[in-house]
Image 1: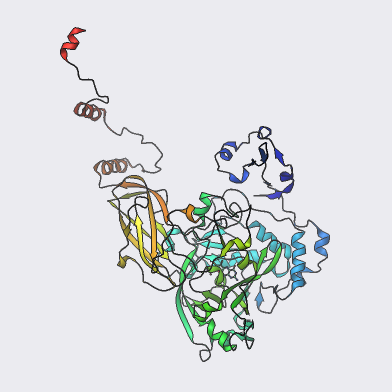
Image 2: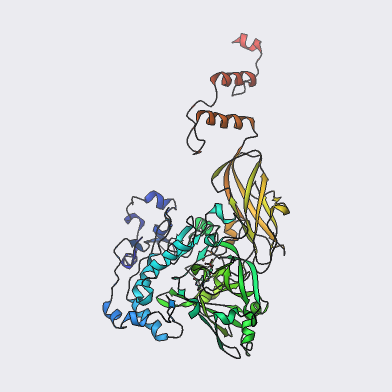
Length: 585
Ligand code: MTE
């Protein structure tokens, strides 16, 4: 953890001989600390070594250029909460001058990166930079890191894995991800980019403008008026494009690998019954789109930071998606008002798309002619070709992620686990496909993906458009020792998953849609020796794990050992000889 020390890069190039061993030299040489490894530049006649930027722990300096900060004026006034009853909402989009002032402040600051290997703690990462940015800008935002954490503790399950404390990113632990077909609200994953605004229901309104015939502002009561807008209820799976990112991180460093980029596992997916209305009807109530209106841009009330700029959370979806009644404005989640952390009082639910388009704390919808130019749409959530990275990345070299591809994951057993079984390993997990497709078949392999067993239809949860299916299987497995269990799904269009992570690895570490692989240590109790050995451990009251601890008592008697070789002959084959030859010696 530390602050980038720019001077260390400008120290520049040195020959390898000049670089003394470091205490962590072995880890560096073995690729376990990639971020500390010098660059090997072979482009010149003589190879050169370039030291990476160093991140030295040092105190945060909140007032680097006080004069610049002071020149923006009273920050508490400038960035005060925007509207009565809307705590934590600063309107940035309508005020370029406010954006410019915040930019000036952020440029004058020195925010800390959180670098280094992922620590073993919960919250896993703190989100140091984002906290500092909120404090730096001031006004209503200052208190948001603390207030948001309070809401997390109130609304989320105590066993959530808090991958990032602020902005809050959390997922349920593996054992609870597929405990039920519908994810209980406290266990639904959360992906936030800023603080959690608190908007009073009676002060809420939604502005609808841009390329619509009759721009209009609706209160929540207007939207809930059944005479105007028929209600809809839909079971929808939301999946973050970062789901299972940790598998890509484990393979190669990508953007934000060792910084604050949530190292999501298989729990960044959740399924809920949402209740609300179709956005199509609301657009119709505004007289429909005028010529050129092709996309709907959604505005979230939270504050988003990017490259020292501040803005609200903005993304868009095409009108065709809205027209198909696949975009909801929802105020209820699993029979309860939306929790604050999930977008209270009103959010968008875009069925079958990447979760990023389902905007929370929605305050404005604008009909526009092109997809949103805002950074979340144009600079984030891009899917790059494998050869694209820091050296050549362009915004236009990534595909904007919309419909999620088919994917699946094993929730039990866990990778590296010892599994004692009677010839079949009980596995469970989820399978999902975006774009309104659904899992038709889930298959598992106990031999690394050579032969596959299909999950029985009655061991899969209900088939629904826009929702996942949870599944269970007793996977036949005779083999013992380290094996690789693989899971893949075929959706109703017969799309399936690439077989390994490398095939789908990308610089932004998005959409880990490859077949899910876990390594387990198989101990098959139907084998006689194995059953006896386990009994032995039991009788002695000694745990079989950890696997790597040698067994402290004789694993076979010397009598048995001698008997074995008597029966089967000695270790080495002996030359056949004739007794007469022996006599000649
Ligand atoms: N809406 C706003 N206003 N701000 C956000 O940070 N995050 C998006 C989306 N909507 C986000 C947002 C992302 S990336 C995802 S994956 C989903 O919300 C997650 O929804 P959830 O937190 O309710 O699970």
